[in-house]
Image 1 (cartoon, rainbow, N blue to C red):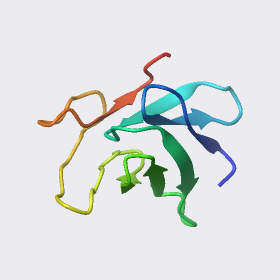
Image 2 (image 1 turned 30 degrees about the vertical axis):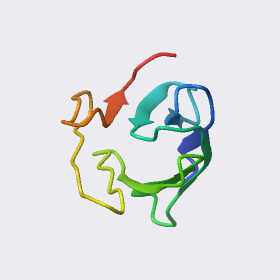
Image 3 (image 1 turned 45 degrees about the horizontal axis):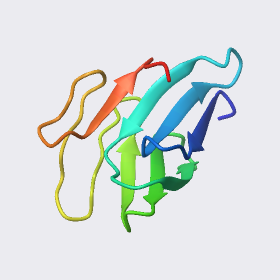
Length: 94
């Protein structure tokens, strides 16, 4: 939609969603255990897909940020850590 940008990479194994106009960080997508080397929005802008050097691909609903690993479905609410350390935090600063 041109209003948000998703970035991948960094030592913290996350992807991040940013407001394209203000540069404000909107979400941190946590759940991978290796470097995230690719991230993209779905055509409708409702999901982000990430791929990592941990050999997994994850699908995140945005803005609800629900990660759906292939092995198991686990919900992670904005700003609330899920049971196995998987989370999407709103507005976390690097």
